[in-house]
Length: 240
Length: 305
Image (tube, rainbow over all chains, first blue to last red; front, side, top):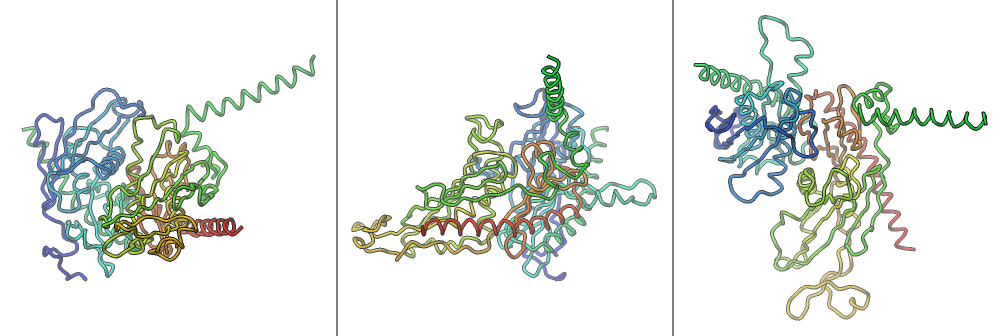
């Protein structure tokens, strides 16, 4: 199984080439253009703005997500993406720092070649960090697909997603960098293997799902290293 | 006089005690819930792993071809399936499953402003029903290549008290279980139309012999669990859902495979908690299957009487 190559020549654990451009939009408070292969999402963050929407808790900050698809009208799928992003981002932001405010995250799909939701989550997390919104930790998202013989492939593209019987989009907290030579405490290890968001499509066995999570956790450390480097580079260039 | 004021004072102090509890519940909902969880019980006196009593009544809407009314505790859902003949057969319609949340269901839903969660539940229901393999779309074909049935599933939430997706899925499954395909015949102009009543059977030449039910494949059942620190609360009410922002919805089918796992945001959850939710969902599936089979038997008894 390890030697099986996929249609585009990658091996099962290989991710597509990533790139993240910091603050391409100079009018937004923070923005990021995240690309995973041909899937490109542009995220812009505006906020915090005063006041919350009706019905939201005024003791906490509120996050509002607007999803703009590449083509076509806004329908149910866009509302699902908006709710998924809103709940995921609410769990990583420190909502009590700026109570009674609204932060808007606007996402524009520039290219869609599979794993669209993970790319959007990564883009919006980077945009929130660039905007200076206080976050508890970063969120790292990955798409995993289950192949017929039970193997797992990471970062699926559109062709693979259509062929596969089932796939899952998983979001993990970014791994914490250990400062010094401390042994990682039990709680830290558990935290790293925790799950923020999980959305599965198609029928899979329980073992397949747990397999996906294992592979996803391993890959998430690579993505979080990349995100950390990008943020550091951007911070250095702003300070210069 | 002394005897009269004594019970009045006792009543007043009792009432004061009761008012304080209700006020405490509204002012400090998290502390109220945690005090209950400390005793391994929930505010409505359920155990942590106990779901609310579920009832399924088939045939609630007489004008629909299949319908069901489901109550999951206080949450009530009404599902109905209507069949329409499409000639030539249409491609699979995107909007065939609709989940409505009218203002009657909850004080949080305002007229003219659809609830945020309604399109999300509609899409999730559609995905689960299609991917679980419960419905064999070939059964809906009438005259191959010329005409087929198009099924519209409408689910109306009558009372929203938590676990909306669970109740909606049971009601959809029950409505399809109750569904009877009506008799049809082909008219002189080549149009296919439905035929009702007994005299129709002898007058028109029928395409299908008798009213039949759909054979359903693997039926999916779902369970929502709220996760709070170390406790897992099964089947949360809307009060618990508003306090605990983290929940997992697991859908399993009869071969114990996972049809769908949805966890949208919330606190970082460990894998042991997720595995626990999956095993709780499997247990719940067995109970729900029995409830569904019982309700079908009740309906068949009613029909023969």
